[in-house]
Image (cartoon, rainbow over all chains, first blue to last red):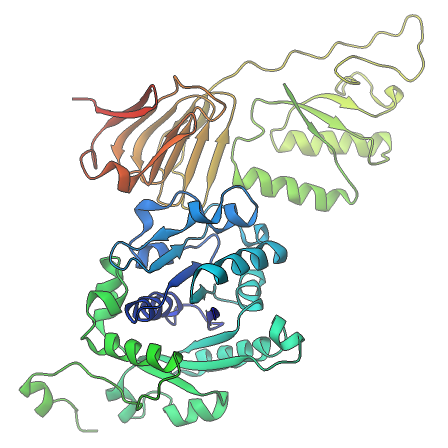
Amino acid sequence: MAKVLVVTSGKGGVGKTTSTAALGAALARSGDKVVVVDFDVGLRNLDLVMGAERRVVFDLINVVQGDAKLAQALIRDKRLENLSILPASQTRDKDALTDEGVARVLADLREKFDWVICDSPAGIERGATLAMRHADLAVVVTNPEVSSVRDSDRIIGLLDSKTEKAERGERMEKHLLLTRYDPGRAERGEMLKTEDILEILSIPLLGIIPESEEVLKASNVGAPVTLNNPDSAPGRAYFDAARRLKGETVEMSIPSDRKSLLGKIFGRRAA
Amino acid sequence: MALVLAPTDPLDAWFSDLDEVARRSPGFFGGRAIIVDLSAIRLSKAELKKLVGSLHERDIRVMGIEGADPAMLDLGMPPSVNGGRPAGAIEAPNATTAPVPPPAPAKTLLVETSVRSGQSILHADGDVTIVGSVASGAEVVAGGSIHIYGTLRGRAIAGCTGDARARIFCSKFEAELISIDGLYKTADDLGPAFRGLAVQVNLDGDSIILKTFD
């Protein structure tokens, strides 16, 4: 049974697109058929992170408005044949998305794929609400800082009221993905603690992705971090999160990149 | 061919929609023969003057007004038209109304700035010349040829109204997509051979041909 998953956050720059690409690639690696859909009309980025920007011809808006067929707009990943991307339009704005059109496209995608992962734009306007509207489950991406946590709380409220599932009186399945987590700073008390975030948001934890230069390296070469360097700390964390999404029980840990001996000895500066 | 604008109430909202179109496609109204259809709204003479003035401020030149009482159109106003022919409310024997001027000939749209990501330049009636670059995620659509004196990083769509002789010229080629007369190629199809070079693109039968200027 196909699942429509929305990756959302409220706040910008927390790692929605990175997480969409990384989770999509990790799920595709496990053998599932996956499509990642960019809902950030006017500010598209998913095509860059997936390395598909040089192959975009048609986009989500063309399909929603009936100018192109779905099969024409889908771009198959060159590394994984069961991974596809449906890009957003850069020249249009979010008003071009209609509720009926999005519903039709998502229904078509459900028939072709096991996972439909929607990369939501930041904010709580039309693009974001349409991206979450038809979802079966949500991944809420949050950074360990107060503004991000508050915005995530707002989004969780919307997930529980403005989605089709909520309007039918059903419960929307939500998962928290904590990104840009710096264990060193957390230990020094410079970041919100995981327990505190979980207490505020009170949704189950899907994974903790450590802050790492591997993420930036991967987006610069146009590859999801789970494909570019699967053994890196964020790569392993995303693979664990993908396994949890599939219902497996995986012990929660914060992977770290191996430090040099000196780094271990002088890893922390005394207060 | 004239473009008909039909203002609706409230006028403020209609103008903001119009500005949105103009912002998304700079030059969309430039050089076009515009006819204003007033059948959807009722205006006093002063309000009509203000409407024409507001359009003029946006560089939209009104060639004719349809659906208005000729009594409202004095000498300073555009002439009345009806289905392309001058018409009057009552057929007075010696009423003279100016004929509709012929539509402006196809001409080149000159854009003197770079085209930013997300912007779209649409000019179906002729060539487009860009004195600047076209960014990734921007597009230029022309009925004729496209000339870019900077780097083409976005999309260039020439001959969009069915002109197979249209060409694309750019000083530095890094395009995401090029198209002439509906035939297109993506950056991935083209490969790296022409990247960074001064290139012209033309159509030979059903093939898109790229050539450098050296």
